[in-house]
Image (tube, rainbow, N blue to C red; front, top):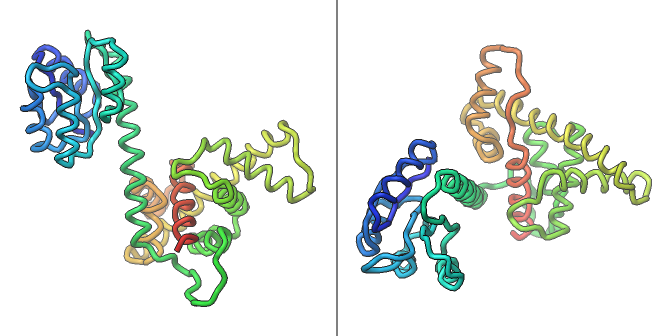
Length: 305
C-alpha cells in the first residue's frame, strides 16, 4: 500500500484528498502540511512514496519545494495540485519532476484515476529495482565457468535456466527462447512491449524457420494465440515444479533463486498449498510478463558479464 503526504495551504483540499485516498483504498496518508517549508520537513520525516503538492503556496511554492526535496535526497513521486492553467507554469512543474497534474477544484474521479496510474508506475519501478538487485546477487545455476569459452548467446543462457525449472522439454520453452532472442536482437528496453507483440514475434520466428517464408497476418495471429497457450502452460509447469521442490526442501538453491524471482510469492505459496493438500490443481494465477521480464534481464546481465 502506498503512503502519501499532502502539502497544500488549503485545509479543505487536504481533507478532501485524504478522504479520497483512504476511502478508495489507494493508500495511507502519513503526513499533511499547510506550507512548502513545513511540507519539506514533513516529507523528509515521513518518507512517503508519493507527495501531492500544491503549485502556489505563500511561503514557498510547489516547484521550489520539489527542488529542495530533490537536493535533500528524496526519491519519491510528485503529483502537482493546482487550479492554474498557465502552460508555462505547468511545464516548469513537469521539468521539476512531477509525475501527473490534478486540477482544482478537486474531483474524486480525476484523483482516483491519476493516483491509480501513479501507483502502477511506482510498482513497476520497485519491481524492476528488485529484479536488478536480485540479479546482481544471482549466479546462474548450471552456467559455464570456463575462462576461454566463447561469449554465450541468449539461447546458451536461457536453456540451462529453463532446465533448472524443469520445463526445457515443454513445447512452450522453444517459444520462450524465441522471445528472448527477439528481445536481445532488438535491444529492447527494460520495460517489455505488450505480450501480444512478443507472442507474434515468436510465431513469426517459428514459422519462418519451418518454411523460410514470411507468414501473412492471419497466420501470425493464429499462431500467436497458440504461442500464448503454450507459454502459459509451460510457465505454469515451472511454477508447479518449483513449488514441489519447495515443499520437500525449502532451502533448495533452485527454489530459493527461481521461485520468488520469477513468480509472485503469493502464487508460489498458493501452488505449494494445493500440492501439499493434494487438491485438484486449478489453472492458477501466473504473471507471464514478470517471468519473461526477469528472464530477459537475467539474460542481458549474463551476456554483458
